Image (tube, rainbow, N blue to C red; front, side, top):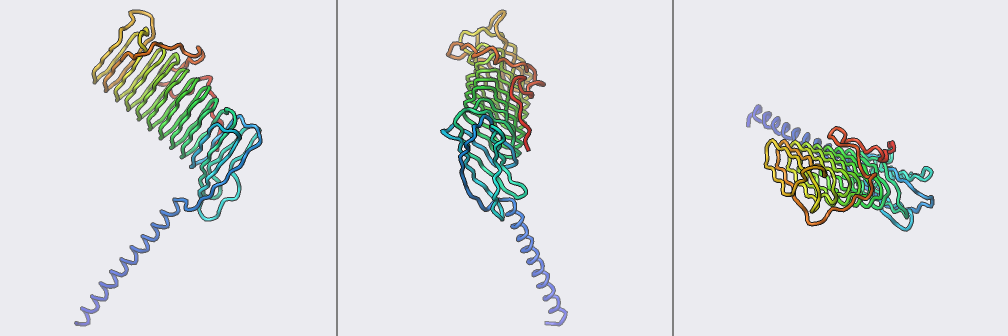
Length: 326
C-alpha cells in the first residue's frame, strides 16, 4: 500500500471513530436529559391532623389529590423526588383550612395526597398538572391546566374548569358549572341548574333534575337525559344532539341544523311548558321521550342565570369562588 493510500485509510478510520464518538456523547447527553425529567425516588408517609377542618385548599404544579370521608383527618402522602430527599412538609393548617401543596420548592418533587376527613368540607384550588378526585364534600370550586377533575356526592354547588382534561360530576345536589377547553364532560344526578361548556369534547348528562340546563360545545356530541320539566338549551358547532325528556312532560321544541337530520319523537305542547332549544351547525338532532314521569326539582334556588353561550363559562353567581393558590 502506498503512503498516500495508507494516509487516506487512517483518515477515514479517524473520521468514523470521531462520528461514532460524537453519537455516543450525544446519546449519553440525551439519556441524562431524559432522566432529569422523571423522578426516580419516592417515599410515603402519613399523619393525623387534630384540628377541625372545614375547608381544603389545593395548590401546586404536578401531583394528584384524592379526598374522601373518613373517621379522622388522615393525610397520606407519596413524595416523588430527584437527588436529595425532601425533609420539609408542604401541607399546612391555616385556622380551619387544610392546605395541600403538591410541590416542594426549591427542590424538584411531586406529591400525591390521599386525604380522609370525618365531616363534609368544601374544597377549592387548582393544580397546573395533576388529577383531583373529591367525594363527600359540601361544595367544590376546582381547576387544572392539564388534569382530570372528578367530584362525587356534593351537597352544594360544584364548579370545575380544565384547560385540558376530562370532568366528571355525579350526585350533586346543588348547581353545577363545568368548563373545559379540551376534554369530555360526564355528569349525572344533578339537582340544581346545569351549565356545561367545551371547546372540544363530548358531553353526557343523565338524571338532570334542576330547572334549567345549558350546554355549549364547539366540537363534540351532546347527550342529555333530563328527569324534570325544565328549559334545555344546547348549541354545538359540530356534533350531534340527543335529548331525552320525561314521559308526559310539557315541552315546546325548537330545533335548527344546517347540516343534519332532525327528529322530534315527543308530543309537543302547543303553548306554555318548557322550551327545548337545540341547534347544531353540523350534526343531527333527536328528541326522545323516556319511560319515567318527571320529578320535581329539589329547590327553586337551583336555577342558574346563565342562558347564553357567552355566560356559560362563568360560575353561577351564588357558587363559591376559588381561593387564590400558588
